[in-house]
Image (cartoon, rainbow, N blue to C red; front, side, top):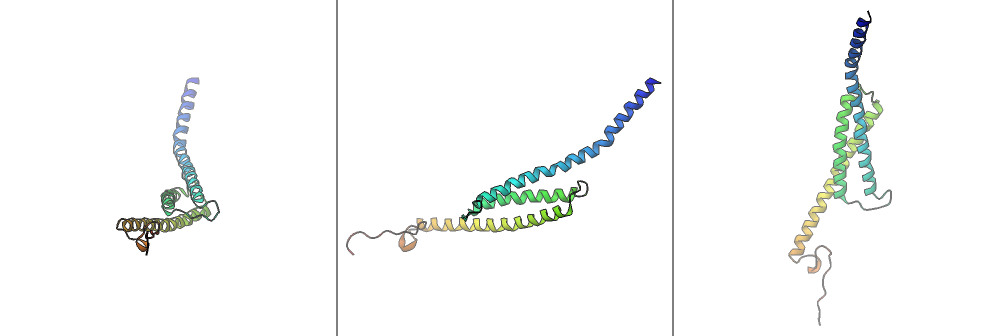
Length: 154
């Protein structure tokens, strides 16, 4: 009799492990949100630092483009995760909608920052080409816009 009970207890323990295994896998999947949310917070802090922390500071569009690109990639992963796990992980509708709206704004800002970065690169390229040809303001340097005054009597 004691021998049979030990088999029953062992069988129930094994069944308990198999029954809880899928739930355990899903709950660890719910923990995946912390990873992309932590990364997102770090990226937002980088963007805030680019802006000078509220001070009026000119932002380098090339740096902003890089950070916004990472933020958009993070948002793509976040929206995908929310879509797949919203019901199972009980993600509130308010959070899901807010995240999606923030992601749309990040995509828009990325487009603007990267367009500005491309324009800056184009202007620098034109200025360097102008400098090489001896162009620029009154024949001066194209990058600084300065020119040299002729020496001697006029």
